[in-house]
Image (cartoon, rainbow, N blue to C red; front, top):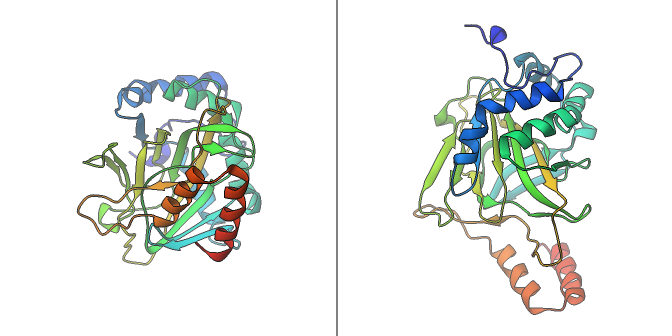
Length: 283
């Protein structure tokens, strides 16, 4: 069967990028039970997520990318760049707004069972992610606090843009258990595959196997994060936390470990000043 005749999971209109909330909630039913049954944290993946025409149009626009907002090239995050929607071409930008809409929030709430989700209008950390050949992102748990909005991070949605991708090309999205004793799941980043998971300080995931496309093509994805207004002063915020896989060459993130120790030992004002200075010095 041609992919053009397959009904997508989330039936956004390719031209208007609109979808009714009722249809979005109904679409969530096909993955909600499986998603919410996963342990030790909830996660899942589904193919044929959007009309392929939508992502084809995005791929066409992304042939020309602006200068990246963020670039990472250190042992834990190698050859990774990201692009915020506001600087991307118009159709791609509108797709991000659609994926922050009420209807899509209804879909994510139904799948995850988390009510009161809030989209991030600033797309902090989100946008288009590109990992070049040789690049990878080690297993990690994401930052848990949106400081600007004082919100708790709850859900990640990832949509892959890679045509004819194979497992041996690397870059698969992996889910690991809390003790890093075993890999729970692995998803090849196939075109129009969507992976989603509920985030916490123990939701260990990443794409640690280096991208190795025979034609040098990068791994590309759409990344969106959703929040709830459940943060309070009893919580401790953290940046991205990395964990090495057992028996691998993954390196510990000593930079984050140093900052965490300083945060525990120093008064808040002094810690902020010192953290700013260390940031400037590259520590």
